[in-house]
Length: 142
Image (cartoon, rainbow, N blue to C red; front, side, top):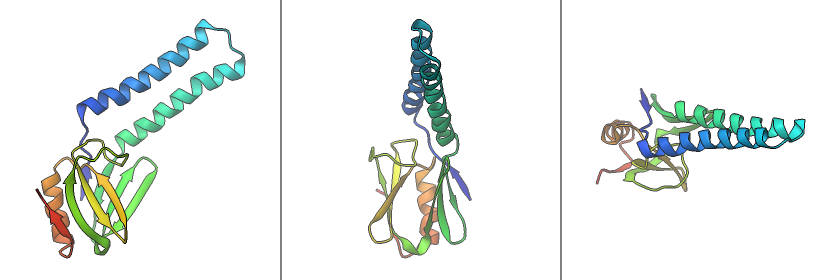
């Protein structure tokens, strides 16, 4: 079953505002000054490629629960977490960088010392489904 990531409106404004500002500022710098060809290419290409990468991450962040694993997808990255390795799941608002597009997150502890922060649209439903697949895991819903 596939679960989309919740997306905070303010984070959307920051991310897309930053991308627009980066492209606009590099474009205006190129057209106001007279840089050489190499500087022009770098000044235009870097913010455009970075914006495409961020957009890729934004549009393809989701979580899949299959028969044996939790799969976390974000852009070109994929993390496979076997259910047997999940030790605990709890709600958090931890702002650390993660494959989560909202601060309303779940912290999943797995393996020996590994954690991942994710932000499914409906945290409670996601936790219920994980509880069914991981009866050994400690699910903290408070």
